[in-house]
Image (cartoon, rainbow, N blue to C red; front, top):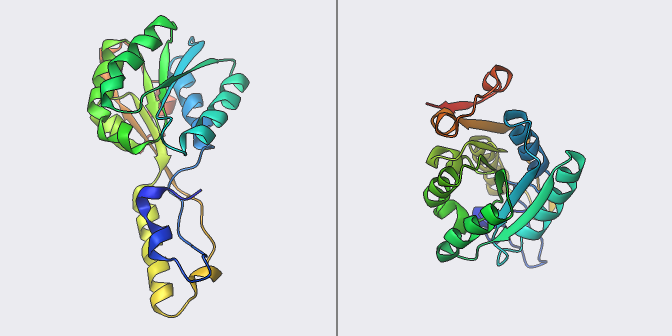
Length: 208
C-alpha cells in the first residue's frame, strides 16, 4: 500500500503507468496498536475506532482493526469524522457507546487536528493509540508506526538508483522494516494509568 502523502507515485510515473516507492503505513499495523493498548489497559473490552470515511485508506485499516479486535476479545465500535467540525460529535458518540479506549486510524485530516483529538480523548478519559507519532507528541497516549526517518533514508537510496539509470518499473515497492513506539507519560498520568516497565524499555521515545 502506498501512502498518498509521500507522493512517490507521482514522482516515479512512467508512460507504461508503473510506479515504485516506499510504503509508510500498512493496515496490518493496526493490530499491533490494539495489542499495545491492551497491554497498557488490560481490562478494556470496548474500543472505538475513529476514522475519516472520505479517505479510501480508512476501509482496509478498519477491516484489519475488526479482525484484530476479535482476536483480542475486544468489541470495536467504528466512529466517523470527515472534518474537524465533527470531532466533538464523534467523541460524544464514543461516550454513548461506552468505549473505554480509542484507536485513531491514519488519516491526514486527523493528523492535522491531533492536538484537538488529544484534548478530547483526555477529556473523555479515553486512552488513545494511533499509527502516527505526531498524535502521541500532541498528547495522545501511544503511537506505533513505521519509522519515518528510516523511510526517508531508504527513499534517498531509491532516488539515487533512478538518477543512475534504474527503471522505476524494475524497482519493487518496499514495505517498512523499522518501527517506532512513542509513549506519552504525561497523558498516562492525566488518565491515571501506569505504563508497564516492560513496555517503557521497548519505547523509542518517552514523552514526560
